[in-house]
Image (cartoon, rainbow, N blue to C red; front, side):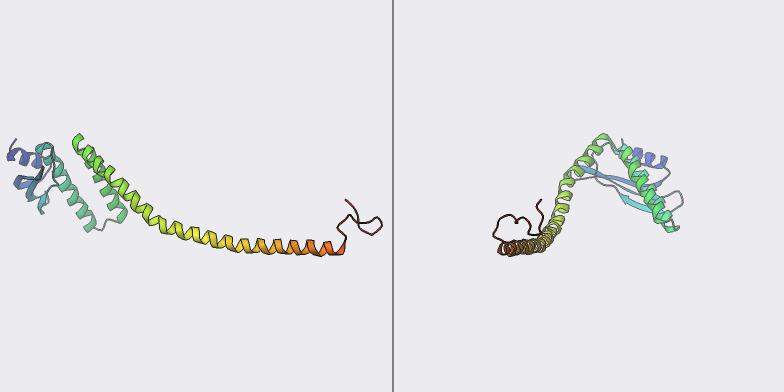
Length: 180
């Protein structure tokens, strides 16, 4: 595996590569590629760090460069947002299909680490809203509780007034009231 192998793989994808460099960054490597697209548009791109086979990464990086150029052309030619979103989604799906197993695991691990943080942030944003809903609910019940207390007081007053009109016993026969 040499620089010529990387250049050949990228040329097979339709890129005219004038310079390819492979260098180490941290625990991984990056590709620095300069050249032209098939339409003559110049490009200079640096890949994200990777740890898998450089030839495989060069092939996938060439597809990324071409997909990026296609997206730019679609947007420049007035493609609507839906078409652009479709192109982006397809590029993401295609990129994942061509990922090595190690890269997929790495991506999954990164996303798995991000999920709890995102959920925690979302929960944190919901807590003040939940507190406000709880306060509103209590305020609504406070009003209802006042109405119930008024109704209880009215019932007590009615019972008290009725007790004053009688001796508390059952109505007398012939008094004009009916017994149940």
